[in-house]
Amino acid sequence: MVRAPFRGKDDEDLFNFYKDDILFLGISSFEAFPLKSPNPYSAVYESEYYLNMFPGFLHMMREPEAHFTLQVQTILMSQSDFMLDDAIHFGQKHANEEKIYDFVYSGGDQVS
Image (cartoon, rainbow, N blue to C red; front, side):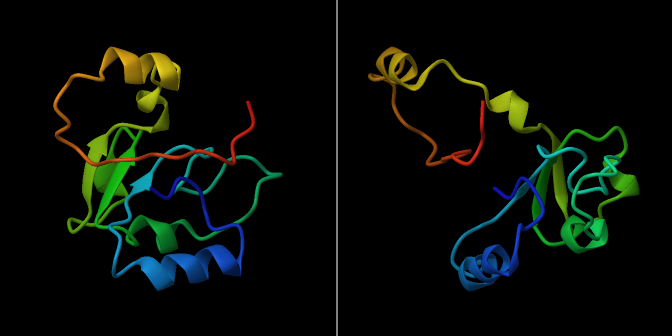
């Protein structure tokens, strides 16, 4: 999941290196990403660059069709929808359930 504009050339280079091997999706999390931020102190980036970069986007927009092309699959779901119990309790509670998905979301660089 890509949840914010690339912070530098290294991030973009990593994306380009792995994009043919890993399915990347966009997800709304950082301010108005992938749209331009209304925050005048935030980094400036071209939203058009990110709007069509991924085959799918988890968003929080009222009218996604006004921003994404028809080739981009969208779902009304943002990062906040992934709030889980603390990891140990979640694992214990679901330890005996059959696993049907292989999905990981990591927000390791976030400060709480």
